[in-house]
Image (tube, rainbow, N blue to C red; front, side, top):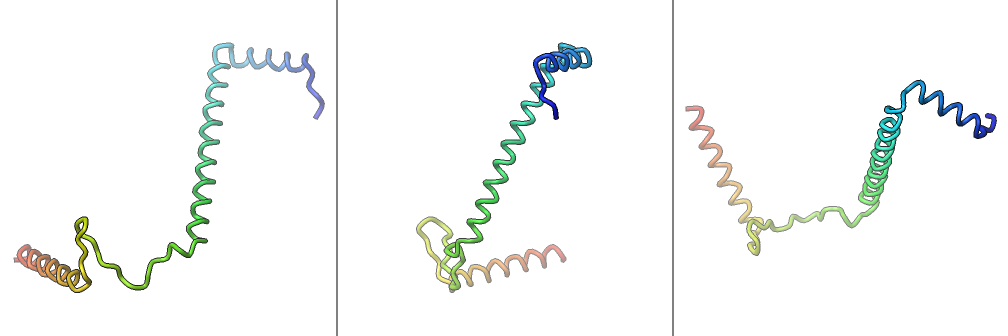
Length: 104
């Protein structure tokens, strides 16, 4: 591609002004700038997402323990697995009763 000198650039600028008009050129440049900013921020977000995904996959410390942990219902209250099973059974009975009432 040949080097563009100042005269060639002036000719190109005059042709652009004749084609698009003096009022539309600043708006077009502004919209191109906005589009470039949006594109740049989105690519940066994609890179961050990729990095966090790779970190999550690579870190073995984030694996869940094999033994179930006691569930906290309220702050400071810890339930044993037996208590959790009892609460779940009561909930299932209540749901079954509600379903039976709806069907009747």
